[in-house]
Image (cartoon, rainbow, N blue to C red; front, side, top):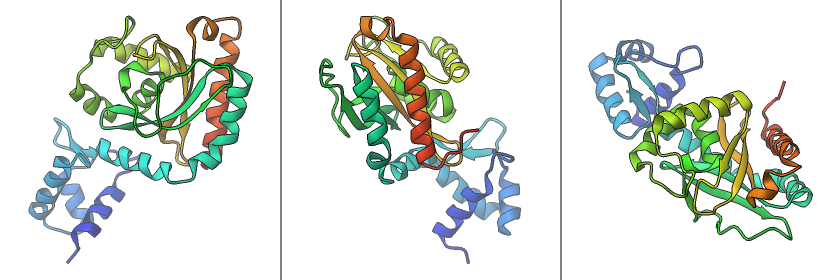
Length: 249
């Protein structure tokens, strides 16, 4: 008899890029188990957001899997891998840089570094949380992980600052631009009243589980070095991704 833990692991392993969705019968056949037995287990996995079931009755991996990936990445000595790269970024430009991850509909920072002469940004490692829709890091993570939208919307979309996006359709259009450009911008959209630029950090398999940003005073960030800052934030995120095993072609 397959134990619950073994069953959970085997079910998760069935999903792939080629087969992102599976029916109850398909899962049962591959596990060589009765569909009724598998159905009960799948319902429990959906309840815990490990799986999601669409209107087509087919199952897909849920956002809980991606949250677990975030936690694994955090314990992979990300400080040692990212530290020198981010140090170079904040030495070259005037601002504060963070690495942020998605957690329960919000963004939590796991790394922070500041330029010596930058204005203080009131963020704290592991403690400060921002709504995902109101930050450059959050927009990156939402753009590349569609399953993050559900837990984000469950929290509600509220005005944080004068430019906060509070409409889902407007946000979706912006996320399309993020995917097209490969980076996201937050222009005075949250309580920090800063201008932020963020780019995706990818693991060895191309999954976006974190993002790197540089935030600073609006006039400076949008000034003469604006395009160069964008280029260097993206380059720095790519370097960190490579350190984590992602092969950039």
